[in-house]
Image (cartoon, rainbow, N blue to C red; front, side, top):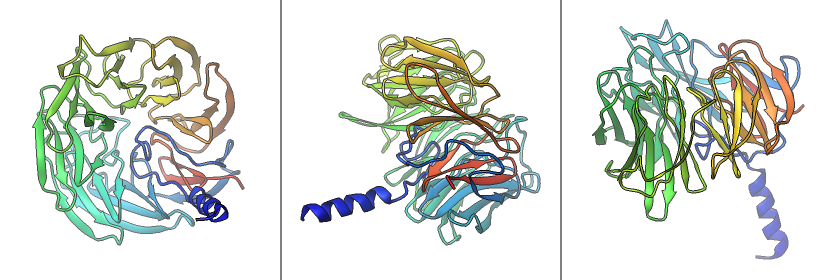
Length: 401
């Protein structure tokens, strides 16, 4: 292969839009390699399209190629649906009823029945509505399989999103009555393994980490987080954190540490070395953060800095290796969405529709403040040189015009 051909192939590869196939993107940690993203926007600027979404849902947009998938609940939650949108035009391609319910169960005031984000793999879309049902849909819109995992969502409704590992769909099911992590055959929906654990309700999304000694699935639950061998469900290690429960943030991983938020009522963040076995509470916790920790937004790791946005709009930046505080600043608003890192910037999105864009680094620097109409509790997604924001009523594609 000559030099000019190699350069041409590399350029074509770099121009390909990066997919955002699951909650928090291709790495599950809120990072995108996309460039040329907008810094500023409003209802009248840098909105490439705006599409009304029927029903209610706080699932983030999952994107593969020119298709965007999200979930919604209509008829007061009795019809659980998958929505497919064309990325280029914003047109709704599919609106598919997956489950029809007689009884939907209670909800937290902020939640709805379509909060877990789909995960995309090949031409399949995997949908999870907590205890209300789990399903696989083909890109054509055909329902491939449906199942229900037997647990009680509790008083808050569905929360955590599923992930894919090889031939498995893995989901944390920490209900009010029973708690377990399950792996379903992604082809058939049949349970391949199911591991019960003692605790209480939680709403987290597992994170896959890859170590020299083997892959691990880290799943925080009430009172402790557990790392599992993903093919078998065998427990590798666990770390305890007292009375922490109703966990929501997804862990992040880097510098040989897993960063885990411990949940309600008083959240802390633990930096855990994942190389241990059994109970590692006394041996593998490198450092902890006790102030300013989120109950809902996930942390964000960029280089040597870890950014923790709490629900009240306060950001704490610490040295990821040591926990040493770099700075603390208030961006304002109330926050449920997890922050993202793209195009060299950090994007925060408040529940009130305001986004604050900052520069990463050891000093706090705001680059822009932007606002859209309506509530925004879903996390942003990035693909094709654009940012996708879901409000209470619409999906926006934001891009430079």
